Every structure is written in C-alpha cells, then in structure tokens.
Amino acid sequence: MKRYHDHFQQPARLPDPASSSSSSSGKMLLEEDGGMDELLAVLGYKVKSSEMAEVAQKLEQLEEMMGHFQEDGLSHFATETVHYNPSELYTWLDSMLSEFNPSTSAVGAGSLGPLLSAPLNMDTSFLSGAESSTVSSIGLGAPNQHSRGFIGPSSSDYELKAIPGNAIYPQPPPRTRTQFVFDSSSSSNHGGDANKRLKCSISEYAPTPTAVQIGGCAGTRITTTAAESTRAVVLVDSQENGIRLVQALMACAEAVQKNNLSLAEALVKQIGFLAVSQAGAMRKVATYFAEALARRIYRLCPPQDHSLSDTLQMHFYETCPYLKFAHFTANQAILEAFEGKKRVHVIDFSMNQGLQWPALMQALALRPGGPPVFRLTGIGPPAPDNSDYLHDVGCNLAQLAEAIHVEFEFRGFVANSLADLEASMLELSPSENESVAVNSVFELHKLLARPGAMEKVLDVVKRTKPDIFTVVEQESNHNSPALLDRFTESLHYYSTLFDSLEGVANSQDKVMSEVYLGKQICNVVACEGSDRVERHETLTQWRTRFCSAGFSPVQLGSNAFKQASMLLALFNGGEGYRVEEKDGCLMLGWHTRPLIATSAWKLAVKQVVAG
Image (cartoon, rainbow, N blue to C red):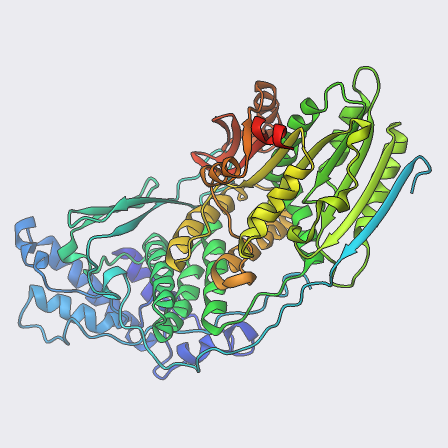
C-alpha cells in the first residue's frame, strides 16, 4: 500500500498543452480542482489532484481495516454483489470502507464515472544488363485502383461504463471462449524485463472456474467463476491492464461484428489508453489491431502501395528468418528436382525484388558437370508509378548470372492477379526437354479473394507439367467469414510474430518489419470482399485443396531440415525459433507456435498420363 501513498504525495503530472499529442487527452485531464492524475487516468481511475492526499489516507485505512479481519470475515465479498472496477476511485474507497465500518458515510459502490476517451491516431504514413542473358518484361492489365472514403458513424457521446469482460456483454450461452496467458518474464533472447509475451489458447466454455495466469516472479493467479466474472480485481499495474486490454480488443471485435458501432467506438478509444501501459510486443500488437478496428468502424480502406510493401518486405527479410527460411527450403526442393537436367525453367509467382534466386543460381553454378541453362519467369504486381521494376530486377540477376557463368534468360509479367495468367504466355519448351518448377511464396492465399481464381491458377500450374510445385504460406486460418473468429486467430498469430521480433538489434529494420506485419493485420481485420487479400489458411486446408486439384505431396528431404536448422542459428543463436517436420513438409515457428509452412507438390500419376 505504501506505493500508492508515495504516488499520491506527488503532484499531478499534467500533459503539456502545447504538445500536439496532448491536445485531445488534455481536455479530459485538465479539469477543475487541479486536474486528474495522469498515471491513474491511463489505468482508468479518476483522482483529482486536490483529493490525492485524502485518497492515500483512505487507502491506508482500508489496508489497516482489512488486516484486522480473518479470511472468514471477508466472506460477504464473495456474494453475487457486483463490484465494478471504478473510474471514481475516491467514491469507491468510501464504499469499501463502509463495507467494514457501516457508520462510515459512503457513496454507492456502483457509482461510475465516464472512462477517459481519446482520438485514435489514424496516421498511416509510416514511411512517408548482360550480353549472354535475355531480359524482357510484359505488363498484364492496368494497376489496381483503391478508393478511400469516410462513410462511418458520426462522433458518439457513448460512455463505456465498465470493463472488464462480461460486464460489457451479458453472460453468453455455452460456446468457445478464449483464454489469454501473459508471460512477462524475460528470456535469454530478449533484452530486458520490459518485454512481454502474449500467449493465447482456446478452451471450451463451461460454467466452471477459469483462470487468467499472469506470469513472472511477482505473478498473480486470479480465478473467477461464472457467477462472479464481473467482479473487479483491483490491481493498479500494467499486468491487470494487459488483461483488460485483451478483453477490450475482443469485445470491440464482437461489437463490430454485431454492428454495435457506438460500443465499438468507445472500446477502440479505451484500447488506445490501455495500450500505453504496456511494453514491448503487446503494446505494438494492440496498437495495430486498434487501428484496424478503427478503420473498420469508420470504413476507411487501407491504401495498397506495392512500392511501400516491397520496401517493407525487404526489411522483414533482413530482420528475421521467416522469408529466408521460405526461400531456402523452396530452393532446396527445386535444386533436388533439377538434378541432372540440362535446361531448367522456374516460374515464380512471387517475384518482388528477386531475393530468392541468387542463392539458387550460385548453387546451380557449382553443380558437378556445370550449370544448366536457366530460364526464370517472374510475375509481380504493377508499380504505382507504372515503372518496369521487373525489368530492373531481371537486369540485376543477369549481371550475377554473367559473373558466375550461368546462361540465363528472364521474362517478367506484371499482373494485377495471378488469375490473369494463361499457360500459353509462359512459352513452355517441352520439345527441348526443359524441367519446370513453379514457385509461390506468400501469394496463393490472395487468390481466395476472387471466386474461381484459385482453380484457374492451379489449372495453369498443371498445364506447365512441373517437376515440382513449391508453396510457402502462413500457418494460420485468417479466412473465416466471421470477423470475431479470424480476429481471435490473427491476434494469436501476430502476437507471436511480434514477440519473435523483440530481440532484433537493428531498430530501423525492426520498425519496418512491424509495419510490414501491421499492414497485414489491417487487411485481415478492416477489409472485406475483394479488398481482403490476406486470407491465410493452414497447411491442412492447402493439402485438401491441392489433392483435390490433382497434385500429390513431395517429401522435403532430411537435408532441408538440417540445413534450415543451421540457418536459424544465425538469428539469436537459434534461440526461440523451431523447425518442425510434419507429413513431409517443414514448418518454422516461434517456441511452440508454427508460423509458416513450406510444402512441395507434383502432378499425381493420373494427371501426368492425362496430360
């Protein structure tokens, strides 16, 4: 209790009226009687500076009185009476003191003041050839246009009366519920105590006691039953706010799904305040999900910018092993499929800056008996300025090919969608006994936004008669039609991804990588229809789809597993990252959570005969 007393003796810390960041929140804090204490205000408690000393005294009185009661003397607090987490701390203390001393005058225990609100920052301007080689590029269609507009609700004066949990919504019927586990303990690959990890698991709802575990040396286990789930747990610290933050995020997503935009708007503002009290990955993840929810509430479609996404992906490539793992494992499978072939042709659905192919070209150059003739067909989205960036990528690869003595040919196709491709465009050379590999890294899920697109592209792949078809996708289901389902799944997934970035030393690469992931979060949550392109699915779902389309799996060899494990040693000494083999496919995850999956496929025997 002394920590409260020490804090209350300090003068209230008021925001600087001159700073832009405090212009809105200052209106809430700079009130009469000396304003509100800023630290407690962020936690949801309103305490006037003129009452600070008296509140501290009441806290000490409450502690002293509670010390005089045995455990059975507190049994009346276990009744069905609802004790809300108050915003008016002063009156709440009076009511608590009256519980112990009926003669003490008190205001009702249910007295609630409005929660603080603040405008969400909607600023998304995160960033404001060789003679022996042939390079060509072809454009397919015009760049995709995205409109932006404000069609949202008018500013609401709705005031949220209570968080946490079921105080917002009535007790639901039996259904699946989410249990969130916070771990604030530092690990060897993380820098300091400020880092927190959000771990999430799904359990079946039942009216039996459930628990939220707060990790760390000073952790507290709080168990509530269904009958008392709306009772407050008065812990003025960031861990309790972490629980409230996750509850507010989930409640906001549910309110949006139910089209209760007034409640959703109030919650998304509260999320901004609760996020401030968090550190590390938790704060960043909550901020991006809050932005995504706000965009959905106000119907602000996130802008699509290929050049920005490309730049961010390059930083993501340098920051963490996920893209390197994807390229490495796919290349290993392609290299093994090309063994002994004199002419090889890679069709890349995810060309971007061509980061995947220098390593494969060098491996081919060192092949016993000399390198094969290497053709590369790259497909990529149009640039906003209509520049022919694929031609530039091809020229750079051609220069490398000349330096390592690989006969090389490149053709680039600019397409709004892979579904715009036709097999005839790819200039296949079956008469020259050319071995074909089709490669896709984080691209196929985008086809699910267009009906029939996936079937068409898989048909094009079959027409190329590839020796191997390599696919890398995110290992998570973010394609549920129900917003709350995919919100829950994506909160699990991206919390893990952000946690894995906490040990990154280069701050610029780290920030850019977080923005890269933040754009995905925004698309998953804020968009619908053809605009929602980040429709990630699990390996099990992809397996069903590919097998139905006439493909059979190719086992990724043990060499790929061993070498991938060696690759991870370059990142934090491999601490935290984990490679897992599953049914002949390779998965890379952070601790126990798989995050991306590499699989390889070929035409089933009956498909080859039919072809």
